[in-house]
Length: 199
Image (cartoon, rainbow, N blue to C red; front, side, top):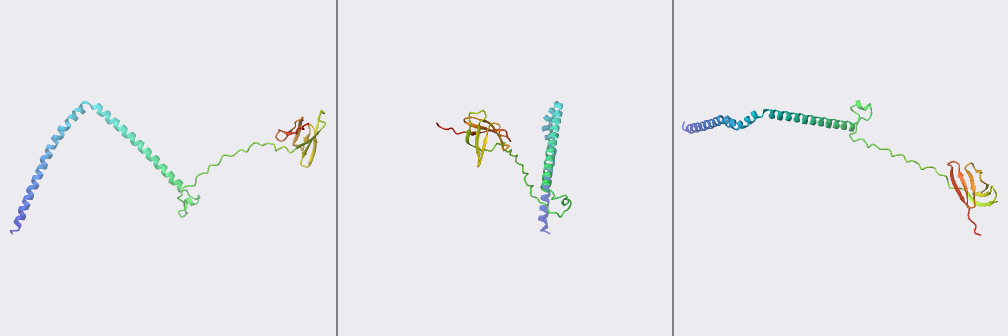
């Protein structure tokens, strides 16, 4: 019986301490609304003095908040669609039949880069081949229609102005310094030089 007495005394002391703490909390809670009202009174007077300004501020804040939310949702939607499109392009089916076959092997590798075709190279314009003739000599240079000896390999030709050689060359003129020919397929002028004889 005696050992129970100190326990009872201890319990009574704890109960008194708890009651004191509760009373302090209750007193502090009753004083709190008065302090809050005292602190809030300047704000209330300011609010009553300028109700329109407060309404405009709330309206502008609400509009800005709505615009920001709309922009954020649009950006999120575009990012989501872009990510979805990228995933779809990465896992393209191998064929139309494999799109409905769950056991078909698919590749997760990115698609190969698209090869850009090179710009077509334009060939150079055609030109006449080198003149195959060499000057050998001339007969009657002072005549109205002089004759010239030209060699083409082992072949010896006697031509005068107006003659056509092998349907490719036409002799245009003969002078003391050269023989002028026209390459007929391209209508291009060519010259066979006549070497000068030192007297």
